[in-house]
Amino acid sequence: MNTPKTRKLSVVLVALAALGITAAGAAAYYLGSHQNGTAAATVPKDPIFIALEPLTVNLQPNGRSRFLHIGVTLKVADTKSQGQVTQYLPEVRSRVLTVLSNRQADSLLTPNDKTQLAGEIMAVLNQPFAPSLPSQKISSVMFTTFMLQ
Image 1 (cartoon, rainbow, N blue to C red):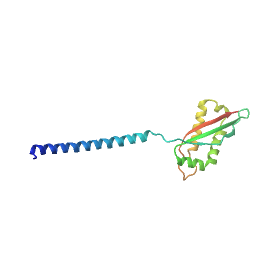
Image 2 (tube, rainbow, N blue to C red):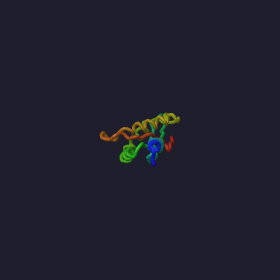
Image 3 (cartoon, rainbow, N blue to C red):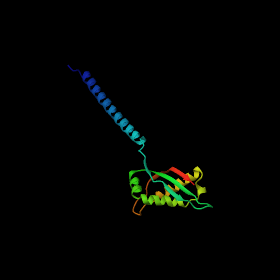
Image 4 (cartoon, rainbow, N blue to C red):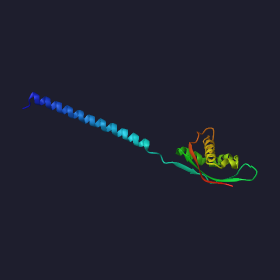
C-alpha cells in the first residue's frame, strides 16, 4: 500500500535521477566537444615542400666573374598553391633566376644576406602567375645548396 509520503518520496527520487542524468549528459557533451575542438586546433598539418632543380647563375660583375650554384626548396601552405607552383614551374625558375642574377657576390656572404635573399624570392614567387589567379601561399624559401664562386 502506497502512502502519500512514499509517493512523494518516489516522485522526488525520480526527478533527482532525471536531473542527474541530464547534467551528466550535458557535461559529457560539453567536455567532448571542447576536447575535440582543442585537439583539432593543435594538430599541425603536414608541410608541403617543392624542391626546385639546382640553379647556376652568373652574378653581377664586381671586378671579376662570379657565379652562384643554389638549390631551393619552397614550403607552401596548401595543395592549391602546390598545384599552381608545379603548373607554372618554368615561370617559378625564371623569377628565381631573375632575382639571383641581379645580385652581386658581396651581397650574399652573411647569414643575414641569405635571409634577405630568401625573403626577396618569396615575395616574387607569391605574386600571381596570371591576372585571373590568386597569389600563391609560399610560407618559406629554404636553401638546400649554396655555393658561391
